[in-house]
Length: 137
Image (cartoon, rainbow, N blue to C red):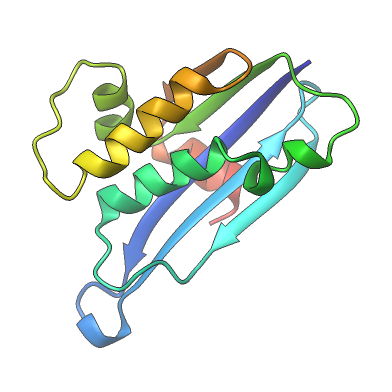
């Protein structure tokens, strides 16, 4: 059974630093396209950048407590994670270098989770339109 997870992370209210909020969101679908889990975090640490939020969203997709896979009766045999962040997808694929010091620890953590995940995982880029449609924001 294949499961698909759509991820997004970001920051809003950038123009008002005191009201600035960071979030991550993910939805897990089974191979029939049925929504099986929705996870959202709205209170990420103050000062988190948009790219950090995108990494945190992919990291959450690899966490079975947050992606809903622990609650399933039938375990997946394959997992596809979609992100609209070309930066994250290309850095994790080794196509782009990680230069930002605030991204390096996240990159290392997420890369390690990919390598140690118990089933095959693919990370693919999708357009922003698709994540908006799938995540409903």
